[in-house]
Amino acid sequence: KPYDNLSTTEGYFTGADNVRLFYRVVGAGKKTIVFVHGGPGAGIEDGAVDLEAVAARGFRFIEYDQRGTARSELVSDKSKLGIDYHIRDLEALRQHFRLKRMNLIGLSWGSGLVAHYATAYPENVNRIIFLSPMPATRELARERNDYLSSLLSKEDAAKQKEACDKVAAAGDADIGDVCRKCSYFSAKLYVTDPAHLSRARGDFCSNTPQAIRNRKTVQDAGLASLRDANGERNFQPMLAK
Image (cartoon, rainbow, N blue to C red):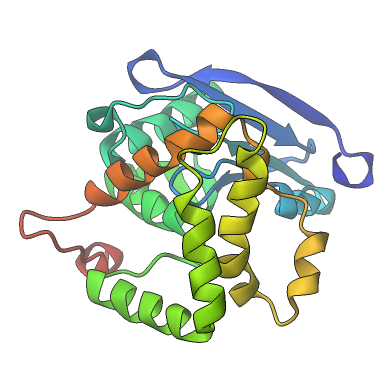
């Protein structure tokens, strides 16, 4: 449900290579914000629906499921899930909504996508917010992951591994609950009180079983496409621009 009875429209637009992509628009303000979700592979349930209240401040809030994700076309060919395709999809969204210059919010992986888009199309960007951005280098990513792992008790780490190992083989009726058990242990590290997670509106484990299973493919291909020939990643020279 939208916040404060804000107007909501949903539909599809055509991305790169005619891929069908789902969008949701909340509010009808004069200024537009485009939200680019995290993951990769999580869909607008990862962050976007929890920020729709922004539209009540006089904005039109546009969010979309990236390729291979949620209600968009479930692309599973890894060669078509790299950053270049995601950049072209975001440009297709801009053209679909006839936006001259975009105000962009990129969450986590979405911040990396937005940074690459701004490098490719600087003339089409007005403002950017990097929200809980992904690490700019592989080394920072390793440090971050090591730190997060240190916050989990050995018992919770074992429970997380057990749950996550079951996702791929889970049946359609059970995969949503298995997905939630897998993601819970990481999600609770982002809040001071895990009970607060019950207030979240987004739930990427509510996506279809097919979309949940495709998430790892989307994630692996997207992150791999950010690495250079030596297998490293470094956004810092790009961000300096």
